[in-house]
Image 1 (cartoon, protein in one colour):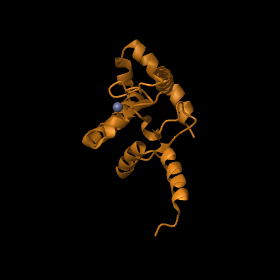
Image 2 (cartoon, protein in one colour; image 1 turned 90 degrees about the horizontal axis):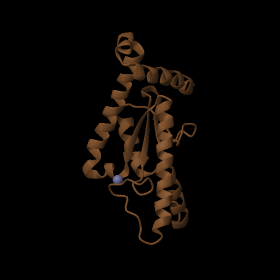
Image 3 (tube, helix red, strand yellow; image 1 turned 120 degrees about the vertical axis):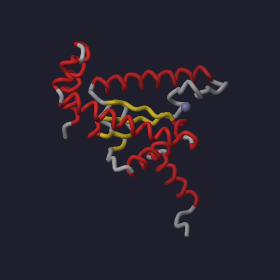
Image 4 (cartoon, protein in one colour; image 1 turned 90 degrees about the vertical axis):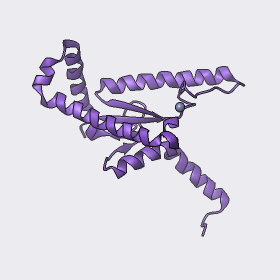
Length: 174
Ligand SMILES: [Zn+2]
């Protein structure tokens, strides 16, 4: 039985959709089923990442191809094309800036495009996301636990790692 009338129902559906859009949900459901725990839409991090796996030091953005200008398939409507072009370029700039901020803070950043979650590509995308989460985690552990590793990397890398660790520790502590 449908307990809501049409109008109420669509209002509710719209609200759910804006909060938990489907592509994000595909990734969250997958990660959850594999035992990963995460937080959603973390506003205090740059760009409010859609998924944050603090234990792994990973944030995930799920980008709509049009709004974020996926240049493989982000075609621009013919009317008003300057308007859209500018808007999308601004989004891209902002995405780039947020990504850099997060990297500077020591997070690994994964961007998943909506089109990578189409049925034909979904399984591979999810596997790649999972692989990258684990790789980031292991890299992080290796850097933390092994002085041998640190002393064997070149100077610029060592500096980068040291800065990241400081910021990361400060930022993600509860
Ligand atoms: Zn795309």
